[in-house]
Image: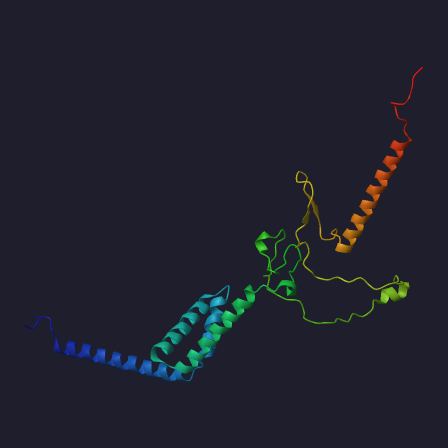
Length: 240
C-alpha cells in the first residue's frame, strides 16, 4: 500500500544520502587506519599517561586527551601493532612490579631512616605521624654503599692551630642495641634479682669470687672462736 505523501524523488534522495554517508564513513575509517598504522603506539601511550597525570588540565587538554584515547581504542580494536604493544605492556607491568617491590623493601641498616632502637628495619616513616609537615614525598632511599669516604681538612682548624688529643679517633658503629634480655640469678625466690649482659661474670671470675667469699667466711668463724676462748667460764667464778 502506497502512502499518500510518498514521493519517489524523496525516497531516491534519502537512499543516495545513506550511500554517501556510508562512503564517507568508509573513507574516514580508511584514512584513520592509514594514519595510525604509521603512528608509534608507545609515544601515543606515553602522551595519554602524561596528560592523565597532569594536575591542571585546560579544556583544550581535555579534548586532546579524548582524541588520543579514541586513537588508542581504534588501534586495539583493529589489531594494529599487536606484537609491539603486547611486549611494551608486559615490560611496563614488570617495571611497575619491580618499583613496587623496591618501594616496600625493608633495607635495615642500609636505609637512611635506620635507627638501632626506634627503626631497626629501616622502614619509611609515615609523614602523617610526624610532628612537622613535609611537602616532599619520602622515598625508600639507601645510604651510599662506599667503603671509604675522603673528606678534605677544614682550613679553619689549620688557622686556629687546633691540636687533636692523643689516641685513635672515636668511631660510630650502627649496631642494634638492647636486644638481649637480662639473665636471672638463682637466689632468694621472694626477691628476684637480674643481671644485665654487661654485669655477668665469666666462669673464672665467679670461681675467684666464690673462693674469696669462702676465705672471708672461714676467717670470720676463726675470729669468733678466739673471742669465745678468751671469755671466762661463768660456772667457775665464785662470788664473795
